[in-house]
Length: 170
Image 1 (cartoon, rainbow, N blue to C red):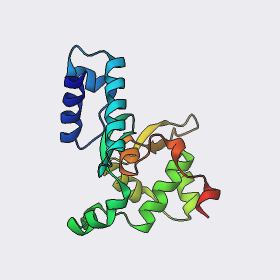
Image 2: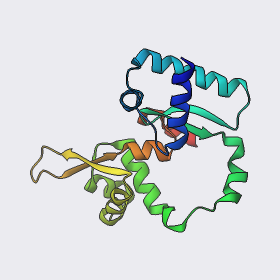
Image 3: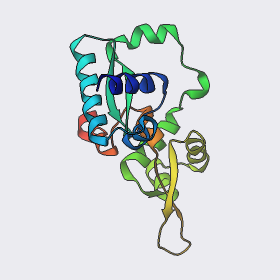
C-alpha cells in the first residue's frame, strides 16, 4: 500500500489538473479503485496531520494537490497573475449568470445583463470556462450554454452545487 501511496503522490505532484479515479487507475495499473480511494484518503490524512502547506482535495471530478489558502498572499507575491488570465467585470458577470442559470440561452443572458453578451460568451468559451450544452427545443433551436470542468477547477469547486447561494453573497 505504501508503494501505491507514493505512486499516487508522484502523479498528483506532477499534474496541474485534477486526476479522476479512472485516470489514476489507468496510470497505476493493477490497483483496484477501492485501494486507490483508501490510499488517497491516507495521503489526505498524512498531509493534514503533518501540517503541510498543501492539501489533497477532490475538485472538478478528480483529485489534486492544492496549496492551503493561508499561503495565498506569499504565493501571489511570487507569481503575479497574467493580465490575459484576468476576467473583466462584464465577463465575470456573464460567467456568473451562466453558472447559476445553466443551461441558458444567450438571449436570456442578455436579458439579465441588459447588454449584448455574444462576444463575452465566445471569450469564455475560448478560455474553456463555458461550453455549448445543446440546443433549446423552440423555433430556431438556439444554443444553450453551461460551465465546464475547467470552470470548477478554476474556482476550486467540486460541483456547481457548491456555488454560494445568492443570499450568502450579500
